[in-house]
Image (cartoon, rainbow, N blue to C red):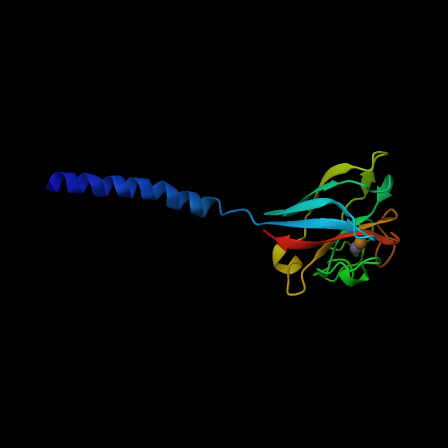
Length: 174
Ligand SMILES: [Cu+2]
Ligand SMILES: [Zn+2]
């Protein structure tokens, strides 16, 4: 009887050890999602955001957009009131930089490369926002992902001369 008790205790210790190690080595990835709608309130797809050690990875799956090249950014406020979506505020910019990848004092943490929408109006794309973290993006007033009518020229202040905001989605954790 005594011998059986000891064996049982050892087996429990062995089972517990790898589980504790796995938790320390690979914490659950933090993710967030956004459902985007256009100025008329019609859904145009979604974005999935994942915190990595190198910034936030953003995967968009969009439809019913105008074909062409569109600016896409992370904006500082998690509020999407159509049709103008001004409620989303400026670009997410916790480090107080200037706008644009080809600006010496740039870029905003929310700046992203332009999105190419083919004739079908549907597109899937992935971006990394290297300076972004959920800690600052999803602060008290949240954050949003915004698509614009025009192309981001990566240099004009304060937002790349990207024109109207044509779609917006509030970023929600989980
Ligand atoms: Cu924008
Ligand atoms: Zn910007």
